Length: 304
Image (cartoon, rainbow, N blue to C red):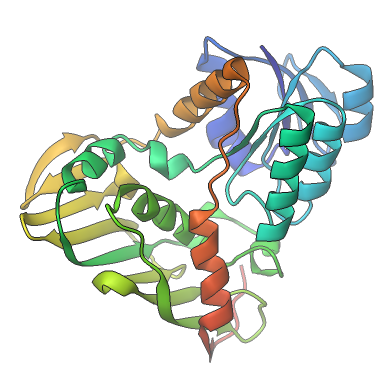
């Protein structure tokens, strides 16, 4: 199937373009970027409406620009009869994604809110192991360097950019997938740089004894760990869900995250073939709850 990729930034070049190039399901037929960025050998547009009008044979659009402008693009694509795949987080608000879900259903189109960390190599096995266990407590440690992963991208600190929840929502996408019973937020502390509109760190407290610490100021080795104690022992997911430990022994996974986006595109191909959608907002609900419930702290100004 032909697909158009909209938003040719760091995540597109690091993950989307390689995944599409290796996929047996997709042909990258067009790119759209207001900056003029493109892909060698692929037709490029700087106007999304023009691409939709001139390339009706492209039936699927993958949107990987920042979340704030994404709704207008997704709505335009659905109104033009195209299936839509949304990079995480799927939108700037819950309400706009609900609106897209209703529009896709009314038009008989596929809408996929992707959560790439759910496709990490050890997540499915962790979910299976936890399925018949009683969770006693758990802790998420998600600490990385914003300068490394979002160099100069000020939009992440603007309203709708989500701040540290941009990576933290990946952890939330995993725990909402693997826990045998749902949890809800009970308290949060959000740390905002004095000159920014979104948090650079967050401490979260959930029902069921689950806690989380997100921080975008980590230097050196990056940390993406989820540790859960159960009535049958301890489980840990490392490297963003790509390595699984049971009672301290590694049982699955490898030191790579490069299988996540190919799995997303395989899932999208299946959804389109079946005429189905996959819209799960559980991770984003926790973020919205943290923004509502969180106690605000202020720290020193942050500059790239």
